[in-house]
Amino acid sequence: MKTTHIQTTTDDHRIAKLAAFAIVLHMVEAVFPSPLPGVKPGIANIVTLYVLLQYGFATAAWVSILRVFASGLLLGQFLSPTFILSLSGALLSLGVLWLAMRLPKQYFSAISLSILAAFAHIAGQLLVVRLWLIPHASVAYLIPIFAVAALFFGLINGLITARLLYNKKLITEQNQAVTSSP
Image 1 (tube, one colour):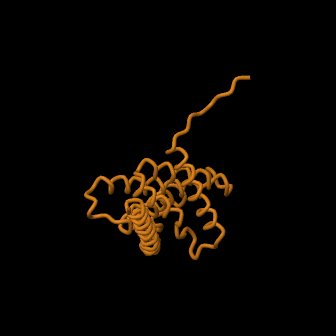
Image 2 (image 1 turned 90 degrees about the vertical axis):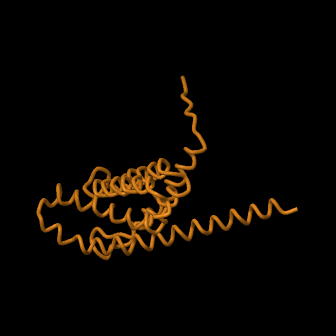
Image 3 (image 1 turned 180 degrees about the vertical axis):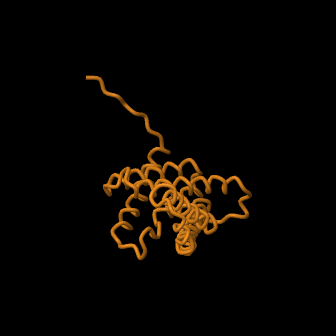
């Protein structure tokens, strides 16, 4: 019997670990009831944003897409309308983050990127709802409610991500100071 060996890289292992962490956060979030149908804090997006700022867009895209597919499978929602909404939000969010990463960095922080991603995520979902699930103009009445939720949760997730990045920077500086001291 012939066996096949797949060569994996350090990046592959990093992506797998980070995606697993994002999946766990998504699963935890799924346990709690939503205050409003379709409104969730999106805590798994903290991982995606952190990865984007630490390892770049390609790694963040892998983590985000793997999270959507694995969570859809684990929650029994794969290829359901809920899965399509999640995927559309993730894809539009990644598209906006990709564009933002090509603009001057001084204009974007973890907080502003998180807010942009949250608005893009909800826009992607509302677009699918309008074009596929509820093809009626009344979907537009939901925009202010979801926009407030996107702003609020985007801000919170951005603050958490900024804090995580700051803590990592402090730890890195402390480690460098310890290794460079005589």
